[in-house]
Image 1 (spheres, one colour):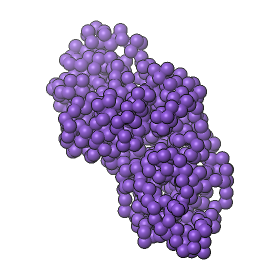
Image 2 (cartoon, one colour; image 1 turned 180 degrees about the horizontal axis):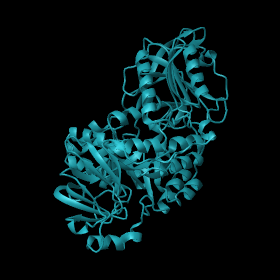
Image 3 (tube, rainbow, N blue to C red; image 1 turned 90 degrees about the vertical axis):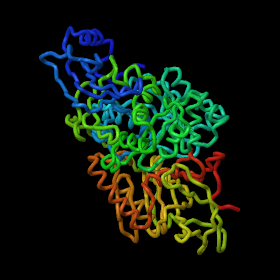
Image 4 (spheres, rainbow, N blue to C red; image 1 turned 30 degrees about the vertical axis):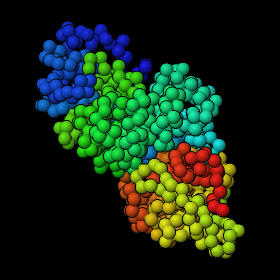
Length: 598
């Protein structure tokens, strides 16, 4: 695959690389006295040098003959060096940071490349939003490799998004050098049942000889999984059980083992490798969604590697899972993923295999980060006004909006979405609630809250109504425009007044997430960029997120990253029950269902 993400193409500088390796011309940079983590052979090579020229690696071994008067020599002093780490599946928008600020946050942690799916901003702004992300990312050293959104909306016919992506769009996008593959194909029902448009989208990707990234979230590891892989899907990050990840690897699919801010799947899915003692070449570790406070406090892929090691994965295997395995998944191991001659000079320095603290980061031969900080300046970037003005809710929201009418007299049995903390799935429950004056009430004692989703892209004035369980909220309400994947306005709460306040707070600030109680806004993260991101620094956004987290706790919530879990309530491609602006969706049968159960 053509790699536009290096400073120089190999054909442009191969003659110079050969001359450096042969000692005819000096290298630009030589790393001396390193312990090389060789991900090709799964071994540590002591006292190894690396010669770098024209942004690429010329020689690995003894580079004494490559040093000249102008050569920069970096003495590793026995530190480990490893390939720059690659995140095989990430949504930048979920960090709530702009693409440039996200890069500034992850590069010092050793991340040199990401395969990102900007389907969040694409659902809001379409191709224009994706183009803005590309331009913002291009000002950074990070190799931001785009997998173009495949499912906008996520499940056609079940929600209203701000844009639509068709197979004709995919045909055009696959011609772009920035695009290395197709974003997660969430519409597995369309794959299974032979929907022409769904297969046309994957077909255009295959014609372009690019990678289809998958999203297969149901527990069928037999006929259904085989069929899904047969369509061309190369990888999947939706394994939540050991057997899911193991069977995907056995069928030649790259199992992406996920560990994000809210989705803590690694402890379970890592057992596919540790318990079964299988070859881990088809295992890749990814973050999927990471909040800014996680990046600042714990790190990025370095944090996931440390966790993997604590769960019993061999340290070198863990490093392979974020380097060469990922590069091979995307058919880019001829350019990335190892410290070998001809490859891009993306190299990280690590203090030890046990602590895995990243001390230096080199991208394309340039030292860009040291001791946890970027050491190169990034050019500024300004998003246009249209990207900062995306709240178009077509109805006036008042407390009356949140009344749920019924013809029942005293009691009504309703379908309830029960969340699973730190997991992406949920359960459908049937719970009987009180009826007062012809309206169904929330029940704090039963931990059942009202939930509404308002269309916010085209002023349609439509909204869906439901109930949720599992947040342990005792009072107040929460609202979010980070509501996967259409990112409509989601409001959850105990009472109508606070729900109206929460909704109108976000309409006023251009989108974001907030928590209110007794008529007071306790915490708010304003995300005016497409209603998804803030253009401030990671430190600034993290402080706001921390304030929101405290607000959630003040109203009773005790689960990890509750706002991320809440954001999945409308995602109609995940089992079992979801709520969109069009209504309740049974995600096992992919059909609309009534709120009340007869």
